[in-house]
Length: 180
Image (cartoon, rainbow, N blue to C red; front, side):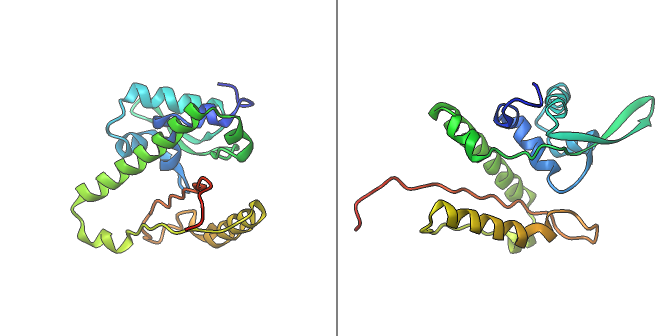
C-alpha cells in the first residue's frame, strides 16, 4: 500500500485498527504488540505491521538484536492514523458500515478483556454515556480543537504509573425527524 493512498484503505482493517490503537501514545516492541493482541497470529500481525510501516502510519523507532533476530520498536508514524472528513465523504455506504463495525467490534473486544480481567478496581476508570449536541460544522471544529488541547497532556505515557485508558468517540448525526 502506497503512503500516498487513502489512509482509510490502510487503517480501516480490524487488525490494523487494533495495532494503531495499541501504539497510540506509546512505543511497543513487536513482542509487546504480539502479547497485547494474543488472538492475532504472528504471521498476520507482521503482515499488517509491514503494511502500516509502508504507509507511514507506524514507524520503526528502534531496532536491536535479540537472540539472533532483530526486534523492532514501533510507534505511530508521520501520517496521522485518522480518517478525515474528505475521506469519509468518499467512502461508500458499505465501506462506512464495515469501518464502523470494525471500530465497534474492537471496542467490544476491549470491553470483554476489561470484564475478563476480574479487577474490580478498574471500574473506577470506566464510563460511558450518550447525549445530544446541537452544532454546526464550525461548532464541531471548535469542540474538536478544544478537546485536542484539553487531552494533549494525557496522550503520551510520562512513565509515572498512570493507567492507560481507551477514549473512544463517536459522532453520529441523527437523521432529520420531526420535533416531538
